[in-house]
Image (tube, rainbow, N blue to C red):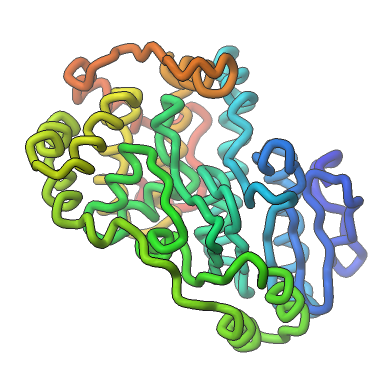
Amino acid sequence: MSETPGAATTSTGAALPTPPDAEVVARVEGGLGRITLNRPRAINALNHAMVRDVEAALTAWEGDDAVAAVLIDGAGERGLCAGGDIRSIQASAKEDGHEAAAFWRDEYLLNAHIARFTKPYVALMDGVVMGGGVGVSAHGSVRVVTERSTVGMPEATIGFVPDVGGTFLLSRAPGETGTHMALTAAPVGPGDAVYTGLADHFVPSERLADLADALTKAASAEDVADAVGRFAETAPAGDLAGSRHWIDACYSADTAEEIVDRLRSHGDKDAARAADVIESKSPTSVKVALAALRRARELPTLEAVLEQEYRVSCALLSSPDLVEGVRAQVIDKDRSPTWAPDRLAEVSDSHVARFFTAAPDGPLGLIDEGSRA
């Protein structure tokens, strides 16, 4: 599928099977439309063609009465999806940014489509689920984690901010737990993924194949719920609920500087460690992420938040921290980025505000112009 702009379809609109070596493998098994992200060496990181292929399959299956539900998973043993192809995004940012903006446009439209998909959309969030992987899973109606799941929005580490609807999800997590995740870029395990609202069910990884087989026999949303219920177990305990006493007290501050000060003075060793982590991230990313989360809390829908994220993402293409962050983490892997500016106090409110201006090629079109943030 990834070799063409979209999935091939029959005359009735049903998605045709794709070659097993395609980067997105789409096929129908019983009443289940199955999508497998198939770049295991890259932990199934999304490129633009893959986004278009997933969208094409969903569009075909949404109108196909023979498909009762959709399941998405990732090839290999490492995870569902490690995020977007950030090497390509960095290359685009070093040029004119058009390719990255086009990728994000289609990716965010896909995220919105997943959220409003009219049939059960089951995401097997096994292993690594980061960034864009959250976008193709956590907006689904049935989100399954396992004991191997590591879920997060690591964007501040590479000079970026949570996107793919991540600020919508994190802004609605209990208390300030979403703010903690965004500013530290810290991933969470299965228990905390369920606690923060990024997932719904815990199923041991050894039972995923049996769950998928049961879903091929589902003919309705009720059948899907029954199948998941047969395999789901209580998620293991996480850490965030027990840390709310310092997370909520510290991250409720108005500014990033005050958040760091509160973390350092709180007295909890985990709070102090969080302060160190935040100060290692891009100061621009930290401040823009905080502003994006606070604004997202006031926006009524995922679509409105995605419009905001698109504006922010396009603006970040001109930030030196995005290119530098990807260089340090992915290209050279020296893990020693040089941020510009390199201190939170040097990132002004006016500088942050410019990231929320209109995208150069216009809005995504998900909401009326009059309701835009």
